[in-house]
Length: 220
Image (cartoon, rainbow, N blue to C red; front, side):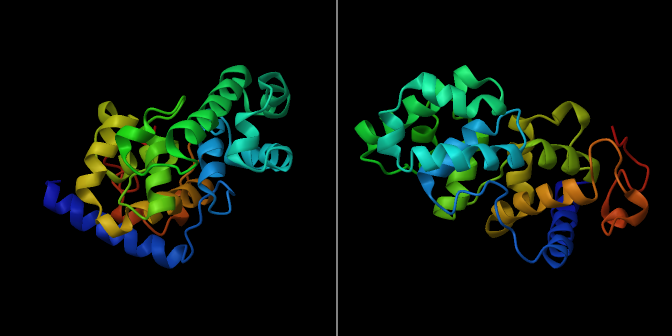
């Protein structure tokens, strides 16, 4: 497909997903609190959103504000976030990030990409999540669902199916006002239909718009 054809295809896909999932909530239950989303985004690396949500109920009950987590004992935080995996690194990162948030940004999560990337453990995926959900800016959150599904759609090759390339390509193909919600809808779609191991292609409402569904690219 040409880039123009891909843009048209993505617009059709967006329209179908909007009908399928009228609401497009973030899977991380932060309640729209930038501090909480910053912390949850870091904990979500190599961990399910569902587990992060459960762990963070205890974490935020004990540390309800960025100030309280910034002053926390890292060992105590490690015990709480242990179920999320990589707990020592993650605990240190979120405590240090909160200290940085308070001392350098006055408690306000910045919206500039370059500033967000200065926070410990924050890469482009988390930064885009914050930019999109908190500030309503155009943002492609290239998580595993987004990368897998959009490759199956034929938007890029298997070699390009990595966070950096996927984001770079999709930013050009998806209308700015649709980017954040599309990524949330892809998470829901990836759990319900286009799963990693056993995608339900026969019952997929996007099969006619999908290169994998038409057998033109591999599912795996």
